[in-house]
Image 1 (spheres, rainbow, N blue to C red):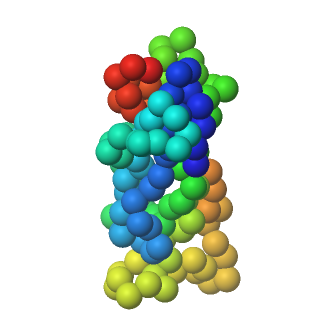
Image 2 (image 1 turned 90 degrees about the vertical axis):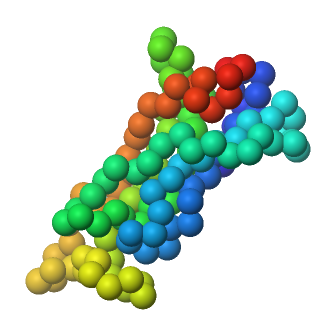
Length: 122
């Protein structure tokens, strides 16, 4: 995802997460132009969601520049996609137990990130 925040172009991304317990990092990089060059991506957040000691598969980190608060923090959303054990990693949690899935295992989350953490000039 890329957006313009004040005088910078900010790209948000996630660490590789295709199954549970793979990665928990959300990154941001900034540039003066939409074509770069971009800064080295900085880790701005670690997904804290856990279930029975496992981290979820997650995706789609998006910064929302229309939601910068008075503390100069931007709203960033991401989606968790369960703790499924269909990966080579053993010990994760099945999507369905007795034919039912926990709705908290698959939904969007939101955090606030200080703009200075993304780029000192924001």
